[in-house]
Image (cartoon, rainbow, N blue to C red; front, side, top):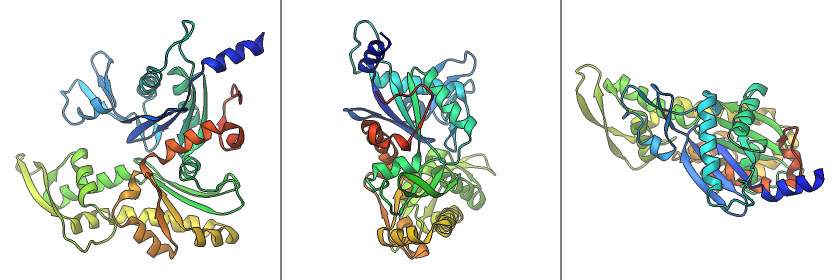
Length: 355
């Protein structure tokens, strides 16, 4: 009887993978692909505690809300900072993902969920992710470390006896890892990534021009003229904000060389983490990495010239993987669809079965 009931639950189950990122969250549904890609932002009414909007709609409110409404990210540096809001955000994504699937026999689907997490998180932070997902409606939750997921998404041969070097630069964390035989041999988890680069530009505007700019403006400047190396072509962009001296709106023109210098310190810290990981890598695996090269994933890998700078500093080839923004969720999805062969790579909860 129990076996029949378990088979019924498995039949009604909807498997999905979630990249719960600091900046963006993506959801992959088995046999349907990536169906959600929205910012990890939630707008809350502070008077009533009501969730007003989640995702793209909430992102539009950032910096534009009255005092009683707060549009914030419930994840900081890749980990949950506001448990209840994260739970509501997960519930929204899960319900949106299953909304395209029909209910059967009066029951809703009972999703099994895999979630990518940073390498350096504590057991308490892992439990917070599991609990938030279960409270949001997941029947079973299991976790996979983001470098492993990125490597799977990049289709690297991580289960073979060879060195695979992956650098995943997300919104809140940079994950550097060497993977062999399905496990992480050496790693560094650095809380310097896309958000820190945005903050560098905000600090630069305040220091150089006494200009207060918002996070969205800083990100726009980073994407358009930001670089890890000085560029041959000179680019400029208007930077608009509030003058901290006069209190009046002001616009100044900034050049790509200015932004490159503003980002230089954080970029050096990322490269230092890569070098430290190289130093901790066993010689035999390092020989493989010298042949195969370093693979870059995550949105931060798209910073102009970063791959060239890393190759120059490490004296090894460096490549940006295809579609680096979705590498983690694609890897989680592949692990989900091949759970029988990739089961050793995931951290299961006590209720997990391979059915």
